[in-house]
Length: 382
Image 1 (cartoon, one colour):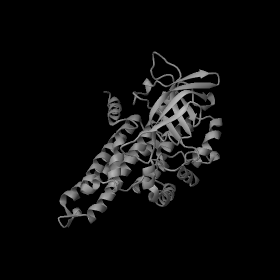
Image 2: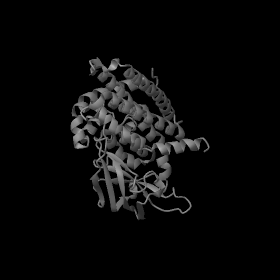
Image 3: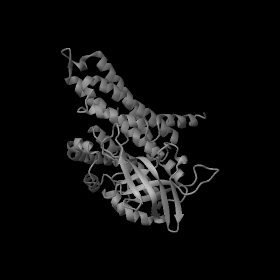
Image 4: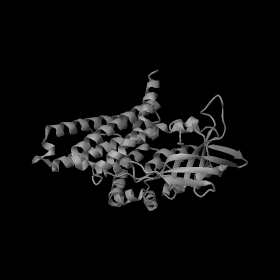
């Protein structure tokens, strides 16, 4: 179906992104997967092209365009090429909004140029062992001591934590017995601060090109100047960006499903069974037709939600609906595509196998499908 959410500027950005991905990412991707990370120089190259700093104000080296569609284009082009851009999506879609919304002028001068250029890499540390989605149950603490906070605690499942120069840590600065959500604060911990340790790299089923680590904080002294926003207001801050965080998962899910379908159509035209191209079988045609229909439905839903996000009108419930539907479509499509590859689909040398393992986490991170259903049910008055 024809899409009408992009302007000529977005399409020019798409061409730039496509050229870079095809020339600099695709030829090296297998090597990066084995290494478990994308080299830092690739982030810098993305920054030099202006692909990382579209939302950062011009005075700090960005383009000053607070338009999520640029992020969407970058993600779509990576998925089209059957690759991912490591932790870029996390940095510009999930973490950068916290800096844009809550950094003061001094912090902007310190960090924004490096964020735009790709010199500074980031991570956000929310999840703790045993807490999962229950942010209000967080046990990491930050005690005020003059012009510093003394931070203690542990975090897990931290995407991009290994290479991160700046880690936005959510910690409890005080306890309110009447409100479990009160008392959480955002602190920016810098790599190399005494007591801050990057632990083991976790081995995942999929998403091999982005590192996921454990972090620990043992009496880390974090300057008050590194606090984002007001003390005790982090729960509200986290909720402010959840719609975009969930949309970035939905965007990636639909783009990946489309890439899987395209790869499968090409494969079944070439692959023969019983002397006949697999594409000629009625079951193959019906399966691909059904998948194409689901993808177009999901794309229409995602595009509408993205435009509401750009206008600042996307509700939490609609973001949840979009993520739920897009990720479930992705799961069904990639699974059925792999089936059409037959035994070869189970071999990691074929991209469909990687798409299959990468897809599984989409129904978990940024809120599980079950959490999405809870949010949707609440919007129905249930």
